[in-house]
Image 1 (cartoon, rainbow, N blue to C red):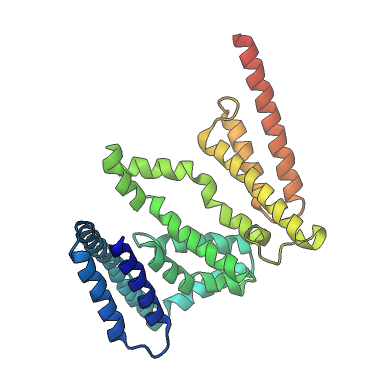
Image 2 (cartoon, rainbow, N blue to C red):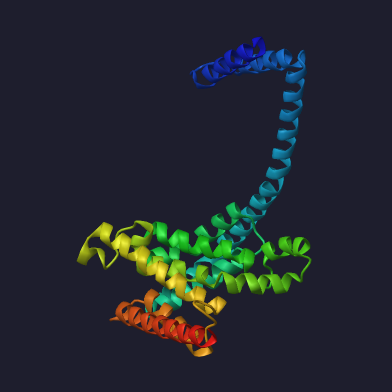
Amino acid sequence: QTLRVIFWVGLGLIATALFREGMDIRIVAGLIAVLILANAFTLGGRTTLAVSRDALADSAKTALPVGIACAIVGTIIGLMTQTGIGTTFGAWIIGLGQHSLFLALILTMILSILLGTGIPTIPTYIIVAALAAPALEKLGVPLIVSHMFAFYYGIMADLSPPVALAALAAAPIAKENPDKIGWEAMRVALAGYVIPFIAVYSPALMLQPGDPMANVIGFWPAVVYAMFKATIAIGLFGMVAIGYLFGKLTILERVLCFGAAVLLFGEFAYSDPLGYALAAAVVLRHWLAARKAETAAA
């Protein structure tokens, strides 16, 4: 009980010292030393000190690769800045975007996946935010959406073959070929590759202004509609990837589901009604066929 009182009093004094303007850092160091000494003379305190020591060591080991990666990223960004290659990539994307935003998004997706290959999360964002996201912003894509679009695909590089670091990590556990795991992961995560496209054409999905539907039905109804449309599109892409709903899907049904999903994340006249109609027709036909097969089997 005495040790607890010493701990909380010392912690309070340290917090006060840290946030009080003009406080000498030596006072903070002295308070920490008093806490360490107080813990050193009790069995539980010594155990706590050992756990704290191990936690600090583990934290240093975890932070070291991130620090090295950030240093490498700084070198890469400096190289791209000095050579102008970042501006070249941006000019390509902007040039394509003047004729087709969809093609510009495709190029940005490929670029982000390449930039994110084999790099941890934080450096990935630093790179794609410096190279890919500004080009989308200049094409009229909202700031947060443009950054999330590039960052999303930078992270998807972890399960995109041929590198697929996540598959390399899973291979020893599953005792399977990393390439096989990578391609299977990419197939299962097929819907994940199209979510950012929906966010670009329907910014309300990320609670951002500029959604065309917001001008018709209002902002919050547009948010609900964007979530509904994204859910339907994800479900359709899941059907395409897995090939099963009420029963096994035929090749034609999977192709039609893919077409309906593409219509839903596209942005042209009557794309949404056509996508919903095609999806409803395919699901209804598949349900009737599955029900008929189940009745015949019974």
